[in-house]
Image (cartoon, rainbow, N blue to C red; front, side):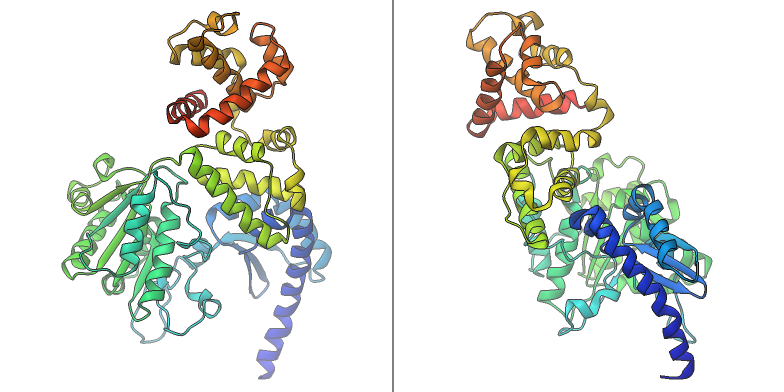
Length: 473
């Protein structure tokens, strides 16, 4: 090592050491799961006197800033003898500009480019796979009726099977597995055909890099880099809607790849027919391929996702992957709008109690997660639930609090009691009082009865899911 290199290493070592000490304390204070989710993939970058924590994503950056940045600053100040200022950015913030060297052929940033050597281990490739997450694989994807068609199509594309449709568009609500499938396709495609060139990027990255290429008069390099891909994967393509030049470039990129027999997969939050802000030619081209919808996960699928996530967390934390059935059912019924929110709720519980998750009761779980519930959900009252259930079953609200025991009234009453227990923070005795002065044991029986029936009665399960969504707005 030269004297300059030695000096550089000496200058860099203290910053890494300070960051290491900071992380040890944060991991202890936040818990392994929370730390791993938000800070585990962050890196420290140093340039001169500037030191920056680089979060894996913009979402992670924002979470760190809102939930941990003050504490990080305290720990950094305590441990850094040089008193350096610490900054916070995401990888997109620091890696969005193309880098060209000398007279070499200009290329777009490798932050979204995925090219691997056949024998290169994953660990050695991390610097070139910043856009992908290893945890998103086909093995870690839980399939069910809501996503099984999209899952089958994704596996077929990743296997480089003949007779594929082009392009493939996966669409569905936020947080239901589109990005997971896109990542899984990239990993599997590289594993099965290491000599093929895979490019993965978000539509936001496509846009920002294209704009920068325009500014630097490097659009030809941009075009060549994407059009040499054997498989192009673009996440959240709806982001380009309304951006005229970006849409034009994406349209010509798709035409070039499809005509050359190369594969393209995109994700969107809506079906192409609903992307009204998108340029008609591009929208028509997206519709011309295979459009796969991913529906919101049903209860069985949500429970399966929780079990898989708990197993992963247990393996990371070294504890037995068990939790009370009523706790998992509560999570599956409460967090229905996004798989990310569902997994986040389980992360929160494990972060709070760790290996004691198996002993965590339903009431304790509800108390821990109460601050994480949406404002609208916390405002739902028993009275609102009664009115909504009565309207759904074509009854009067007074029927639900009456003494009438006919099945046509008793079952909706039990559903309303179950919903009150799930959505509100009222105790069983309090709920009973609001249903005509009934005893808390009656409410408990209703809750358990609906839990049992939902597993065997698909009509009732759909009714409950519908009511949950309606009450949560």
